[in-house]
Image (cartoon, rainbow, N blue to C red; front, side, top):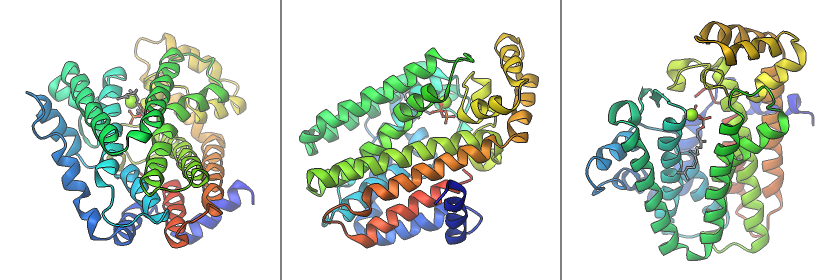
Length: 344
Ligand code: FPP
Ligand code: MG
């Protein structure tokens, strides 16, 4: 099936509007009562943190978020026939790692708004944003080393990839040399690695066989790639209020994402515009012109197509995984498909 056919099929199945809230309700119904603790345990993770770091944790953990990564960890656990009690601490640590990386990311990117609120660095300053991220990262290390010591090498690999993704992105910031290959290296590192970890860790907690664990890691990896592709589309096309952050942030931060790379292949003037953007004192006018160029080509459609292809690869990864509960595995695929249509 070509990618547009996959998109049409997904739209037919889930409706035109994304249905994240609905699919998350179904997720919690599948997971059962034990998952009701997830949000409370997550928010309690920052209690008792030293000094002002406690307020930083309350700020970021209380600001909402889709909780996709812990849901993936718990669904992978159930799909691999893990029984009660659910590995809540492990699932929480997936969300804590995500939030730790955002606290650091907002310092690197000078991010002003996160989840519809002023970012932690705007309210508490850069130093506390970094220390808050350090604290949440420490909590993850504590959980994984105590509850899943056998997973430490995979956890360390995940951290390495996360850091590498950000380093490559930083090195290419404002560079019109960014091509499709380096773009993929960035998003695999900064986003796919953590989704892969969430899915793998759930399968590991359920004592899945090595082949099944590898399948779940691959599943998470492709879902993560698709997630970031859609994120980069939404930067051009979303409703800023629903998204909870400003649009055109990527161009403003000098990030050449796949929509821009694709648009440059069609619109000859884009190279010159990008050069102007890098040199401009106030780049906002040029950014708006670049955005118009991007939306006038088929770039966003092509990127959505690539996201659909990765979602199909994710589904393939767990289709024949040994020892799975098919109903839960199918729900994981539905979750991945719904993420393709998200608007926030
Ligand atoms: C958001 O991307 C940031 C990430 C997906 C990952 C950030 C990773 C790090 C800072 C390195 C590792 C950190 C730790 C704690 C190990 P974005 O800037 O594209 O999205 P945004 O628009 O939401 O900021
Ligand atoms: Mg950022």
